[in-house]
Amino acid sequence: MSDERMIDTPQKTIGVLTSGGDAPGMNAAIRAVVRSGIAHGMKVMGVRRGYEGLLNGDLFEMSLRSVSDILQRGGTVLQTARSKEFCTEAGVQKAISIAKVFELDGLVVIGGDGSFRGARDLSTHGLPTVGIPGTIDNDIGCSEYTIGYDTCMNTVLNAIDRIRDTATSHERCSVVEVMGRNAGHIALNVGIATGAEVIVIPELPYDFDRDVLKPIFEGKSRGKKHNMVIVAEGVGGGVEMANRIEEMTGIETRATVLGYIQRGGSPTVRDRVMASQMGGKAVELLANGVGNRVIAYVNNQIKDFDILEGLSMKKSIDMEQYELFKILSL
Ligand code: ATP
Image (cartoon, rainbow, N blue to C red; front, side, top):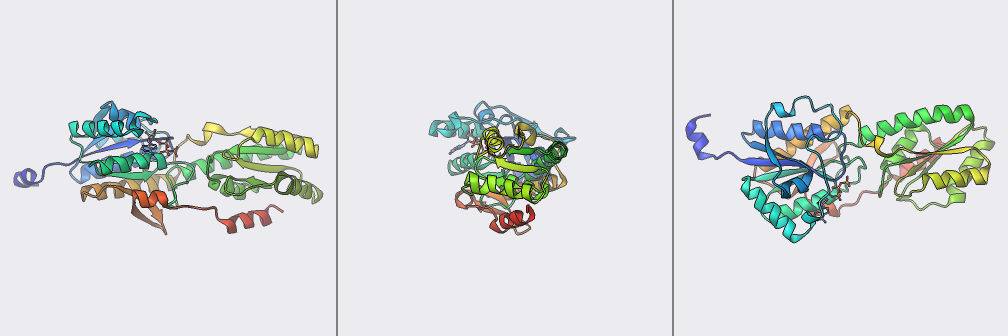
């Protein structure tokens, strides 16, 4: 590149942060943003601890080598946080001032829908910001996939396979509570993959007698030696459900709340590739001066939507998949 060209086009600076709950693959996305940004001739600043770090001016320049050896690591090397101050008008104004101090021309926010609302606020206040869906729940309406979902499902699958081994040996019923506050995608997919007898998810109202007891009694009469009941966190009460099942059926029933093991671990191929593609796309948008977008995976393609439009889109549970689960659990 000639000196003349360097003078004509001042170097752009972009920031990258992770926000909300961590998800495996966030590091792969950070790496993609840093390396794609530098490849586009940009300076890339890492922001520690999400919007909280932005408000505190906790930014540092990242290099090609600063993202070496993180692709395979779970969690987020930038740390993540939730910031109440940032949700206020004064907080957003302060964040914009800090962004000016560090001469940011754009920002990439890796997180869930709450984080995207913050990204929209920054965009409307003059800092072009692009969101990348990073959340294990796969609960972003505009995208068929969110970073961390596949790794999380595989972690849950491995745990349930092990629980089933012991449940079969003891002829027990197992109730496993998995993540998913508002969405049952993890529960439904892992339920099919592990051959669960019962799946309880927030999207579908359930009746305990009809949807939990009946399949257990019917399975028993067909010779089943164990029962696997998967409950999404949003429905809650895995332990209470186990107690109720034992009381009503007389079958020894144990509850396992999988909790935070579902968040950690080395990302799968799918999460690493998806995070890399989404990171690259986010940088491409900012390089073209485009902000207020959210990256999405739709029909096997990486696309982008206006943040508000993306946030307004709804994703429902696949009822065909649910009906198939019921047949396969017979
Ligand atoms: P997860 O799905 O993993 O919970 P998330 O991005 O939805 O991820 P939140 O805690 O909802 O997680 O949001 C992360 C941060 O984004 C908040 O701490 C806050 O700083 C900011 N944020 C959330 N909601 C809003 C909002 N309505 N307006 C502006 N900023 C918001």
